[in-house]
Length: 378
Image (cartoon, rainbow, N blue to C red):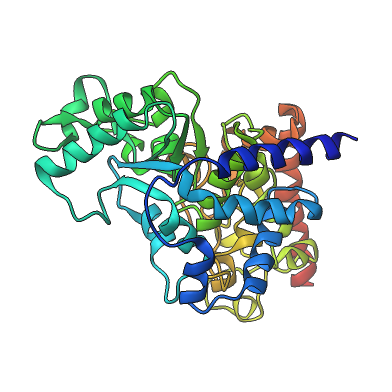
């Protein structure tokens, strides 16, 4: 009964949204797919995958497809703060257009410094006009950490010389939903790493409005587009963990679905890069993999059109979707060892495990690795 009610509510919401005028006059998603050689069958397979990724019943697949087709009713403002633009690159750089990137092209992207033609006064006017025109209706996406307090001047943007923090506050004030894209915007990232000379802060520390964190360095394009589709479907924020990350994307550990998990359980570990174990695809825990302490869906969704990800390529996870990972997860090519006990608080995020059990878990992982090494030596 509850499932039927949710299905009915989403259907009604999408029907209402379909009556809204397009924000911009452009081709439809169906036409874009056809132009790029993507069949309706491929589109529906993608919709089924997105439905499963959001932990929705398979019967919701047609609704997911319709939500994707209605993304042109949704204005988006994307701000760049102190960052490398890697999160935008994750979505935009591909050797062939993916359905995710086409949907992002289809969205009414009112402001995005990396891909817009405007500059200077015109760019500033575009941003101000978009905020005013779509007040209370637009989605705000912010990429990058934000220098704050007396250090705001380290990020000065545009011809008016406004500080990045001012831009973020002004845009957030009238947004319908706010997403911090990437670890820098979600948690401060490398800009906020010790000693944090610019006093960089995450977006959630700059505004008092709810912020959904989509961390990763960079996050996958599916995690970015998936949040937009969730908002279209439900008109509300997704279920979040203790770090305001969507549980559908960050509810499990890298370790839980890792393709090398069987090697870990068998006590088969790479001892150093390039050794025989590395050639055989052994577990990378002993050369620094932080997969057991990192919550993300990289091991399931992967990158580069689902072709690969760091562990498949032979390097351990560095924990980039965790708070303060630059300070707590290093050295990246060495096990956490004694630092385990102070750096895996994220384990309590999805599973609500007590700190005592966390300690036992950490000890168990270290012991497992040691026992596995003894077995191998024998």
